[in-house]
Length: 387
Ligand code: CAA
Image (cartoon, rainbow, N blue to C red):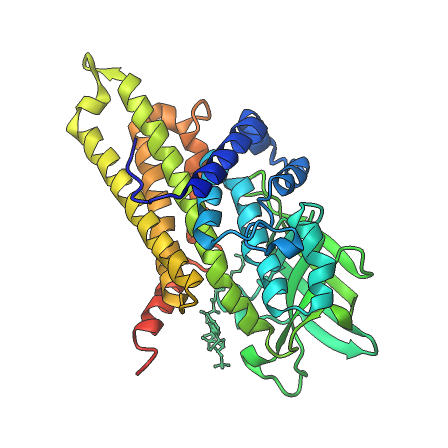
């Protein structure tokens, strides 16, 4: 099979094998059914938690595995090869809410949330986008007003991965006053729990792909959030979100690589079996060129991703590197799944083979956690950041 250009330690191989065995046993047999019904199976959260996959980057004192970023991404890629829906749950949970609480929360918040989150007893979600604030995230309008020992939140959050099943949702809301708007510096991040009065799960999206990952709107209707649930500084929530999305984008890159790899593996196997003109089609250069381009782009994506991960663990700035990894890997996922459908021909266009689902699943990686256009803006800005 394809070279992955990644030297793994013994521990990384073990974790990769654990992820592969879990996904093949607990998810693979049900995927087609869950995808058709847009069904989310809640029990996978606890199963992933039991194996440590929901606290991969958390220190052991919070029941996490405390592995480095590369090891986490290896496990995530492996889950994504089997099921991109489970992978996005794992990516969002590990990269965004748990990291935000660890990095920007106080000790009481860490104690309260991180252990149950690491164990898979409490799923995390991230609520930044709104109906009118997508790429222009700082234009969000959900308002938070201080009232005694609570902040009262009103507004609607969109595209919240796992939002209907989450126990801790990191939600951004304006803390500046309507008469004195402070832009990106007038936003706080709140740990919203679904038991709070005024919390409502709204519309569940009927999506093209990732159909067994629930994506919902959340409505906050005079939602009273205790002041204890404010994360850090009430004017820094947007900055926390931006910093955290750098972790998130590494996770989405790993998910995209997993989808692309699944497409390559399926197409390589099929091209060996499919006989046309009395010849397995992989003997034809037209097919070989496609497989070669898929394999090359996957290997390049993985190299970009893991060099960014290593830089992150060395404490370097990875704003540009994480956007590059996400951009290249998501476009690779779209390229590879498109090529795989082409190699399968008519059989790629129907649900009898997995590439039809992979093609649908790949698309969102070019959209969420910052579109490809936003990644290019971030990359370009970094080129002249020091001017
Ligand atoms: N790290 C730290 N600070 C950062 C930062 C980063 N990576 N990026 C920006 N900031 C800071 C800036 O320094 C600036 O601070 P100052 O006030 O000190 O100047 C502040 O944030 C505002 O930054 P910009 O002026 O650059 O803000 P902008 O309005 O021009 O927007 C953007 C920048 C890059 C376009 C940003 O809005 C963006 O990333 N948009 C995409 C949003 C996104 O990715 N959404 C995904 C939602 S999650 C999801 O997809 C759902 C899911 O569950 C999977």
